[in-house]
Amino acid sequence: MSSEFRPPNLALTTIGLSLATFMQVLDTTIANVSLPTIAGNLGVSVNQSTWVITSFAVSTAIALPLTGFLTRRVGEVRLFIWSTLLFSVASFLCGTAQSMPMLILFRALQGAVAGPMYPITQALLISIYPPAKRGMALALLAMVTVVAPIAGPILGGWITDNYSWPWIFFINVPIGIFASMVVGNQMKLRVDQISKPKVDYVGLITLIIGVGALQIVLDKGNDEDWFSSPFIVITTIVSVIALAIFLIWELTDDEPIVNLRLLRHHNFRVGTIALVLAYAAFFAIGLLVPQWLQRNLGYTSTWAGFAAAPLGILPVMLTFIVGKYASRTDMRLLASCAFLVMGATCFMRSNFFVQVDFWHIAGVQLFQGLGVALFFMPVTTILLSDLRPNEIASGGGLATFLRTLGASFSASLTTFLWDHRAIVHHAHLAEKFSPYDSTAQTTLQQAGVTGQAGNALLDQLIIQQGYQISFNEVFRMLGWVFLCLIVVVWMARPPFTAKAGASADH
Image 1 (cartoon, rainbow, N blue to C red):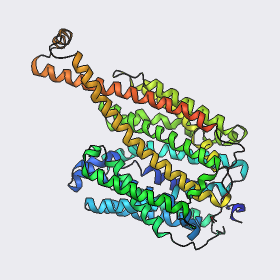
Image 2 (tube, rainbow, N blue to C red):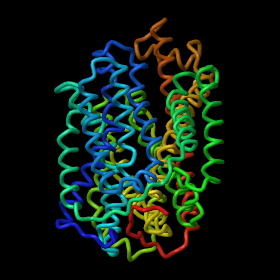
Image 3 (cartoon, rainbow, N blue to C red):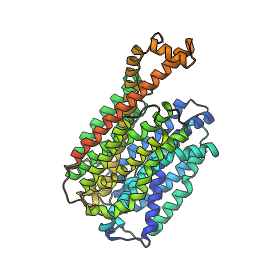
Image 4 (cartoon, rainbow, N blue to C red):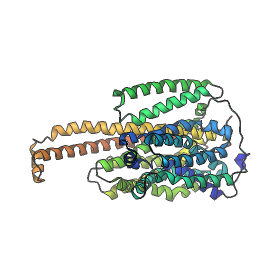
């Protein structure tokens, strides 16, 4: 049985699996700060270059729920090795792209092969660790999931500034080859159960169309002014129709390509809801803070990265402590502590103002790291706890897919709310502080700015304050989301023990 297999060198196998996941998660954010440079070099607008991000996100979202089907066809170890090697090849092709269409095509390929990597790594880590140490394995994977997106923009900016943008992709090649060789060598004696399920073509096609269209709507909605754009309207209609057919078909087909019936398990259902909502709120924080630092406080992208980076310190320091001792504690209690800390940091940010200093921002990020360190492992353990061993890979893929979709919804909604509420507050503030207001005139005269320049400065200050008030409102809302999730997580039922997975999914 594969669930009893132990590799010759557990530490080396863990490094190989973790490196591959770090590389894959890193690539979700590493290109973000390099887009202006890429756009300039390839002769397109910055707006067009955002397809570099969108194409990767769309392909990953489509590939994630197919993990269970692919593991049944080729086995977990083989799927991991091929996904990691193909990710390296796709990364190399991205670095050699000579035009934007080529880069978008190669990024889509990179995203497609990246899809199964995280859930397969999760299933393999659980399978090679004894039951008492599976919490440690999940805590390690949680640390990688948190640190990689933070490191992405910092590393991407540094490489782009000091070398050239293709190197943000080329660095994946040696890492991917090393990880696949290590895991392949260490796990070559592991026996995977392989079957030949029929290909559910209706499910596959409707998944590709529905999720692909939905991801494009969520990524491009803000840029296209949502439903005032015919493109967004048509894409939304296509997505709704395709997803409706997909859901009906998958729930009634004998051999669905995505096993939605896993949601019949109580803990998987509750844990997935908690994971999706908590990760969506966490993703909103990670998206909003750097944008606010650059737009409102005038930070450079590098300094915005440094201010956000302390978030990763405590997860790194506490990983092994959480992994070692968490199994002795009720997972719902750990998750509740995590949501309490993350909610508290949101309420702290809701009191931020435009003169807040760097160390105050970094301090709140550091404190949030405590919540993050306690978040991923217990919630993942809860959602996997009542799955059968042969359902782990499928469950991990489905939960990660829904988590990714939740993050996309969160990104669109958060950006929309921040911009929309800023416009509302700008209108309210402009009523109170016009250039003809005596207080405003006195302030501008004291600053030595009058006339048109004074009016422009006043408008700039009102815009800045409008975005600040909106920022505070969004974080107050996120704080309440985290507090409500404490209620959700206590709906789970013990015992919570992550079982070892096999590749079959009957």
